[in-house]
Amino acid sequence: MNRKWHALVLIVIATASGACAQTRPVVQGQNSIYVLNEMAGNGLMLRLPAVLYEIGLSNGQILSEMEVAPGGRRARDKGLDFMLPDYERRIIALGAPAVTPNQLIVVSFDSPSAPVHLAAGVSYDGVSVINHFISEGGAAHGLNITLAVAGGEGTRLLSVPVLGGGASGLDAEIALKSQRLGGFFGTVWDHPGGIDVRVQDGANLFLQNGPKELVDLGVSSPRSVKMDPRHVPARLYVKSDAALVVQSLGECEYSRDGLGSSIHRVYSNSTRTWRALNVPGSSTRVRSFGRWLAFVVSEAQPWAVPKSNVIAFDPGVQRVSVGQAGRVLNLLATYRGEAAASMDDLFAESTDWFPGVLLLYDVQTGRLYRMETGQGDSEVVLIDGNDVYYRVNTSLYRAKIGADSVGSPALIVSDPAIGNVHCAFISR
Image (cartoon, rainbow, N blue to C red; front, side, top):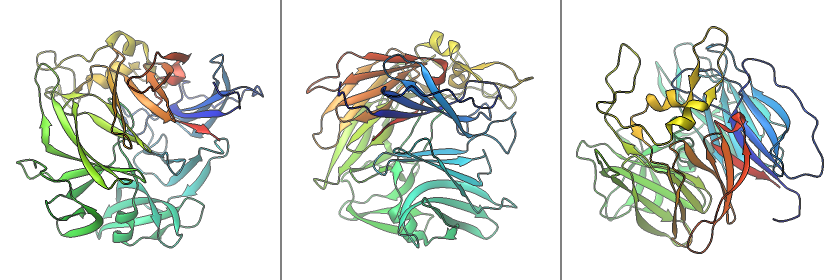
């Protein structure tokens, strides 16, 4: 390990029930990892606080904690609505509260102890936020958090500069062309991002904002893409400095009892070429870490029949994701008067089956790596150089990426605070 001290930062949701965040003294001169425990927009409607923890890498102890966004008992003015990590711009953008985000929070990778709070400038009288993304350009000529707000007068885009300043309208073409997409962060309850695209052999790739508005990305379309017969557009899930990732449902093969497959069309900005990356799982999700892509392998399965207005697991048509015993022990924070809940309750709401398989793909070299955790609730939270950090239930591991395989993992910490970690970063 490099003896030059550094900090690794992750984002996770608080496990304390409704109490204010405490502050512990920091032990100086020690490698540490920051974790923000968060659960934006979850199915159980748990309005949990987002808390940034600092954890010692050498001993796994919690050194400090700071509440980034407050929680509350299923209140509309508590919790998080979205989380957007950008590993190339080294920020995480958060929207609070849930459902009606009117405050934007920016956590910088390089100053995690000083999150910036910005007013979203949205009034929710008859309108709703239908999308959110990080963009560049506009009046501020820098990074923005952009909200797509729908109301009686149609959809409008509001841009809030990350460095501060009031919200302003943003030209749709500028916003869409400059938007940055990181993919899915999470497992059964993830933070999706994506936009429809028009794919056509011999033509450029166009972002599709509605049935008529098209924005040219200046990149040729991937060739011979099989489109969905129901005329569902292909979607762009990753748009970064390093790569684009496009997926069409027409190239997802479903398996009832095993693992199907899906093709992810990966464009390398450095080589200006497309590659058809065939991975296991018809519903496998991608996320971006600069030159690296990580995948959580999953397989679609039939939707359970609702028992009233609640989606419940139906063993007659659904498979239990591997590692159920570990998920039952991952208890979610609840408030007085609320029923107890665990991570397995979230998995019971899912229409995907998770076999405990993770994939790493190097956009520059084209190498694909496979990791088997044996636990459905596992995900890569950071790839930094040749080190991969990943969560398995409530444990965080680190392993070295070799020439042909991923090395043996080293446990960093096992703690309830890790149970909802979906991303991590190292503070320089």
